[in-house]
Length: 136
Image (tube, rainbow, N blue to C red; front, side, top):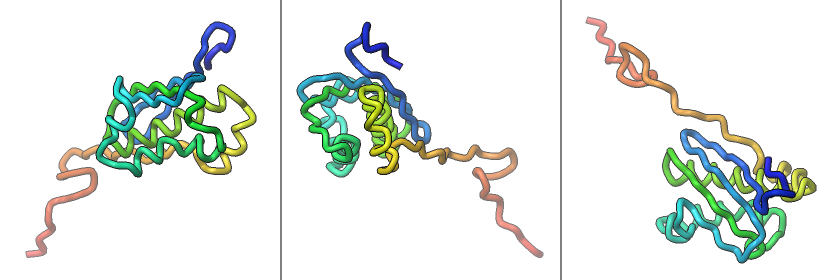
């Protein structure tokens, strides 16, 4: 997506459930910023989610401190947002270096999880839940 001659960052879009993450990766000092806050602050409730963000870098054995990651994410909860960000980072790293694609694909970091919430249907209580059946 990003033209390397005019821009100094690599852009990718990641999605999961109803979360959408717009990710920019550029050479830097290792700062991961999510919606204007450091990732440690944004995901303060879970260290596991923070580790999940850095999975593409760990898989490639590339130090996180070599890149700055800037993310704008909306929709969903923290877990869905982290999955969307992780996919966006992996896709942006491929924009940076196409040789990373095989490694990331083998680690299953490039596949989008297609599961979405099923909509509520007319006449039912939820997507599939119905009223209790009475025989008599």
